[in-house]
Image (cartoon, rainbow, N blue to C red):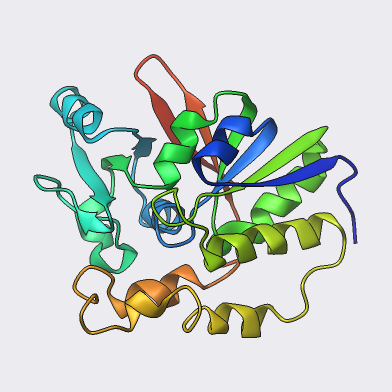
Length: 234
């Protein structure tokens, strides 16, 4: 198995995003960047990560054929078309659309990664593709940033994703991933199984987000004259 020969830093939360350098993977498993992978699988035209709700509404005014996706504290932003739930979306609704996406953790990592030379969106659903891209391109430094809950509290699913990516980079892929992702049901993903929170965090989201290596592509985040843009690279 090929290995990565550069330096790998595992960082955390907003401060981690600010400290990130080199090729930076912003990791948000539940649910921002899992959602973005599923949206591209449903053939959206483009995704634009946005830092603030206000900026998202402003972009909506000037972006034809667009939909607003986003949450704060997991809850869909008032006035948005959708929250952050991959199970709530169907291809018929989003195909060909431009998605304007703002979240409490994932997109905050993007807008704070000012020192990154390249930004990728990371989640379990495309973790191996991210690792293989890093091995193929061999940057000098890689930063894996676990964004956690609201970018304020460590989250087991993001830590696992970073650990898994690093294991592939080291040439020793974690042997017990099936057990590790299943365990997230009891350590990190409990809110998807609590009847009191399932209106915001539906159980199907959990199962979609833990399908590790479902997608064979990376999501690269760049910047144009309008703002940040996420593009699928096969």
